[in-house]
Length: 431
Image 1 (cartoon, rainbow, N blue to C red):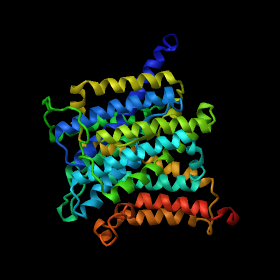
Image 2: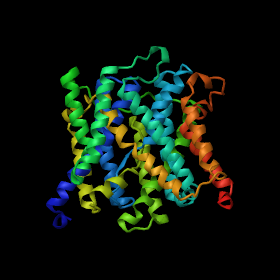
Image 3: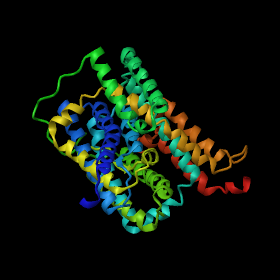
Image 4: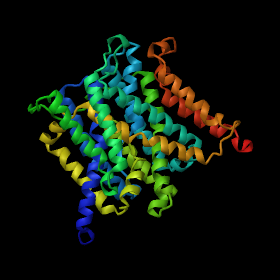
């Protein structure tokens, strides 16, 4: 391998590292803030996220699907972690109980994913995730994440009643300015620089934030040590655990999107064996994530756009970038420094990045040949899911507690409804 690594591979590896960084850095910071963790704990969560992400990428490219596809903390799972804070607050559930039940659900869903991989059920489940399901999934996931990012831009905390929320207008306006900057840069900059739009947005935004509002002091405490179950000791809440198990099943849609989306690019055909190895690796990583309070993992569909933009399909750069990512997680001062990233700036940059989900959804919908009759296959799941997202959490308190976290989550309800409609009704006869 040493003989095949070139200077171009090293530079491309740095580019992969920057892509991983831009996508991951905000997630543990956002989760730490939502679950009211101490700064020490957020630093530890961030460091461990870097290490596990790098190792997960290496495991997939070496032992899993064998492709340069980022294995990162899942957007669907991230949405579950954050929206559960809001929905369970209406039940007066303590955060440590939510965190402990969620950790147990993540571990169980990880083991379930391993079983899906080892038994070869991944290829079977793949038949359920038809283009209509994937289109609705992309739309609802995009809506969930964009809502999270918008709240982050304006300093809206999670788990508080509406009366307690005050928009942070100054930081919100700066975040909006960064959104406009990143969009213009992505459109107007030379092609070779566009792949750095996210990173440049973070750097420019962070500098502007410090110049205008100042910065928190670096946390120099040596107490930032990795510990088990930082979100709460293992406990059982039926609603949260069942929601986590269902989220784990629906999370496999990311795998289908990433693998099938790179078939043509990389000249591969996704086989049953590819699914088997991919799900096994993802399941093992997610089981480990549950013990350390990390958002579970999945292959990133956004890797497709990155590969198309850079046109570098070799494994060597991806391996180099993954190793670099592990390295920055091991060095504590680096983790402590990055934990000071303003949440509003990180949210602004990702607000632009994940707007691409809209384009991905349209690509899936194009293959359906929708008309005035069969459009219900996607319209009903999308609108039902979106409406549930807009309803206050207090509206669901009359529902039995064991199913309340699921029914109050528009993302999960919409995806499940799309799966049912696509696989029960024969829509093709209405073309």
